[in-house]
Image (cartoon, rainbow, N blue to C red; front, side, top):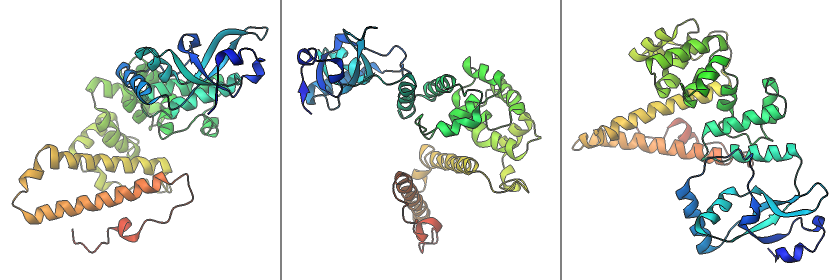
Length: 343
């Protein structure tokens, strides 16, 4: 990466600045006032700044020259990408940052890039991503046209939380108000959103009044209400609390056809929650110590844990390769557990 100096490029026409790499003083870089990301951890920034001091800046930020209406440079740059690095530099007293100067894209292109960056940042809260996605739909004038949202998923960054985010955006208006006021959190809001709009307000009110946890709601009550659409929230709570209702329920209602992909994913995630509870029984509650002196029990627990490890590893490999060429099928042993053991 060949660097120019700010003094040398300042002598050139603006069009010749683009694509160049320059060390730019941090004080003449202006952050984006409409940056969708507003969450920055001070300790994280200090660590990043010290790392830049110690090993150098690994990635250049990108900036636009800030121009007057007549096309002349104002002696400032607008920050396009790299606000964490810019903030970190100020936290530890760095005077300059390596930057690539790029032309300012159109407002729509800029919006797509901003939202995509937010959607692809795993450390950001779903609430922040929701605000970014909602702003994008408003700017694109499709906020009232949810049937068009999926076609924009690729340009807006998508991500694994897309179904939950779009579900919250389509909540009954009164439930959206409850979410906006902080009466229900994101987990509860997206769980309530799995039900038809006319059922959502009653369930949300029940959850608030009875202080239902998000986990219990999403893994027990909502699945019950999906399988029993005529049931009330109180009935769902009582049947879920007692337990056992699942064994009498068919995977999906007769005549409903094959469950959707989203329903199958939710079912898998529900099963994962049951595994987490089993783990808590085993480790947190001390069962792992109670089996000491019982070799057969230790063998069975170890064997079951090994099979879970094999399956989770196979699933992770499959998911990691989903954007590459179609992977080879999982082995029969991993899929069926037919590994010769009797656990």
